[in-house]
Image 1 (cartoon, rainbow over the protein chains, first blue to last red):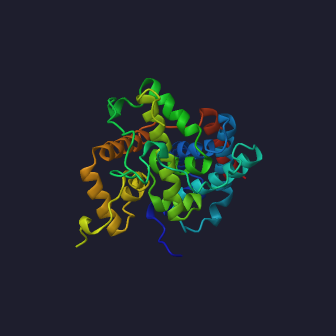
Image 2 (image 1 turned 90 degrees about the horizontal axis):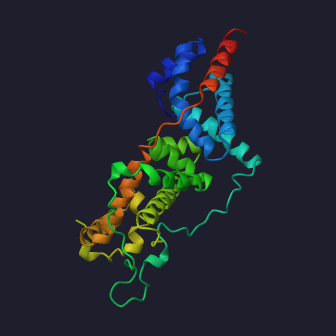
Image 3 (image 1 turned 135 degrees about the horizontal axis):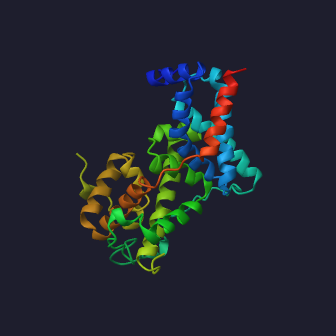
Length: 211
Length: 85
């Protein structure tokens, strides 16, 4: 074992194995939100996504005795829901695995001056301007829908990473563990996802005249 | 000491691809110096960085998701059944 099991995890495992209902309900309440977000990365139908989360919890119960503490308990549980959601998503053809797009750009290339520009090669042609909407208003009204739509249309692999890192606040190594990604791929996917959401907000706030 | 003037300038188009690596502290020392030197000199890229930060912060404030009450109840019953075997 490369990693000491978290003492809190030891206590949780002990309680679960002993059938402590309070601990189980508490974990279901705390962890089902992130689990549901992962399921929704692959499955559009909310009822089906909830089923996937339930199935994952049942798998967790069945597998408790096999948990070896190679990762934190929460990361292990998230990994279980990822596996179920990915295979269910494939069956329902929502997440047809797109070929990994090697050239996806954070910003549309037409926003920049050409490489042979005499003074400012590859500098902004259409500059971003500070958003006039205050940050704490970005989840109000129409912008909230724009953000939700942007997330809904992310490729599942990007969406998984964005959910764990930015929405649920896991750190890089935890997300890599839960999703079975290398650190580099995790950062590439995260950057693309963030960039797509930023672009969608920018398009909305500037009246759709930026790509 | 790595000096920005000894390194090729980082154009805006390159900077926008490196923002997450910068925030995660995964740039090489040279690229970090180039990144910061460009940012100090470019209003547009500072505006871009600010939008990027606002995007991340906003994602962190999305309303919580939760499983429906029925599903939670079903799970508790399953848990009881599991230990009542």
